[in-house]
Image (cartoon, rainbow, N blue to C red; front, side):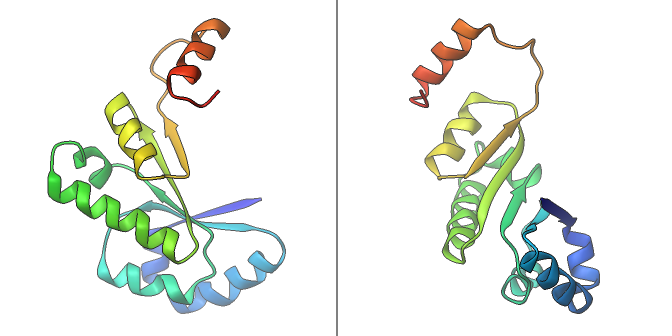
Length: 134
């Protein structure tokens, strides 16, 4: 099982969350911070909570292709998360360029918004081969 909690909950109740999350983690739950936005206070809380995953969406992801500064921050954020043992997932990815950037940055999971009809099996195979995933 995977338990997602918002960064707002983390910011508002860090002391109360840590013991509860530790118990859940010992029972096999994966702990994920959802809707993460960069902030020094939140980064400071990472070390005190038993997290497994970081879920990125919106904000910095949407700006990463247009802003070198945001791309550098995203690179550092993913590297930092990996460095402390977290997996990083990104959701709501619509563009191929952003998908490619996240793969290059070794994002562990990338979820797209489904805006098109499902792919036919042959087209899916072709897409996977082009991306060297198959």
